[in-house]
Image (cartoon, rainbow, N blue to C red; front, side, top):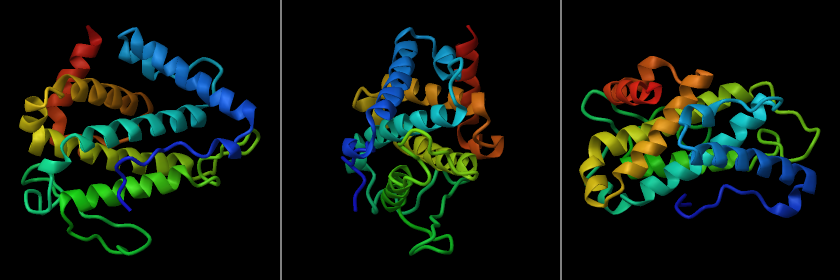
Length: 215
């Protein structure tokens, strides 16, 4: 099933009003701090809030952002144009999951991204992993899963920047992409979600964005 157009929101009928309100307030706080232009402030854990809930809300947000950004260049990212998921000749990504691909498989970029987004969506929809009801705890493995989700989402950013940035520029989307990625990296750095070696394909860009954020 294609991920494009899939909403990451769960059916509202499954959530009690108190849970919806709490998640809405966290999302509203994030949007307000983003609107201030201070991305460093936007990634900080709000005082008194639960870390896992903050990670969950932002995971959904970044998933939606990357879904939309990739959606703008899908006609240029085809199995013919991108027969392997990569971020240049030095960085190639193979798909692996607990279903069809139990061993890492070399697939085209659009196939990789489709599997990735469908996999993330399945995690978000799993009540035992992303609980929507008040009083239900996140699983002990939650942070490990968050690390895996962010590591894999980064690869989509890397592919877009390295392989398709000229297309992004021609579409006039570079400012949106840069702001989204800067927010993503600041969040990753704030909570140590991705190892430095995984960020290597965009190391120079990351250094530049982090330097800008200090000013």
